[in-house]
Image: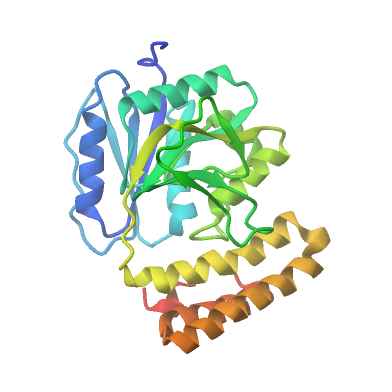
Length: 299
């Protein structure tokens, strides 16, 4: 394996009211022995003031505070811009609830240098007993995730439509060519949109299935049944408008019917938060109301 200790890259962590989780993630990154990334922690309008990181020459941490919640796209864009200003050639978006080893990150960096046509790259994401290997076009598929067993072994790289956002690697040159994350998505879908623009620019998106990262999903999070359901569904309409405008007349009715199915299911099962989220997502998606809508959920 090549020596990547001199590779200048930035790791961006987005914090929103998860100080303990973010601090633990930074501590783990600082324990790396060979790689010396610049770490950028974006505090995305959190209600607390608990984030503090000791100075370190080896692994510097830049704390960027946003007075408001700019969403996943807007918050990460703050970190991306700072990393590019600091001369980072590689940009890594890392969820604070995800863990990737130093060796795995080295393999990703090396793979990026081997494949000239790569625009973005990620590892296989371990969630429980499953392995998440990126996904398919979110405007065309209701189930976008490529899911396999963790026992799956695939050498090399696997080309896909989008790379998981939990651990996401791209370069300064790619960002300069295709642009930053689209803040109209606000939360969910912005990585799929970025990858679509990467593909349109002539690059390829891929995962390394045998390189693994762990992601802990908190299923009982009350926001998952409302906030996430709303944005993940509403943003399909935005994705269709941006990337499938020629067949929008087919796709929009399909997604309206799909959303109505989810809404009725929620009503029948007594899932009030979920059914309300889909109803509002359909309305906003059809009307073209995008961006921050956290006010709908008292967030």
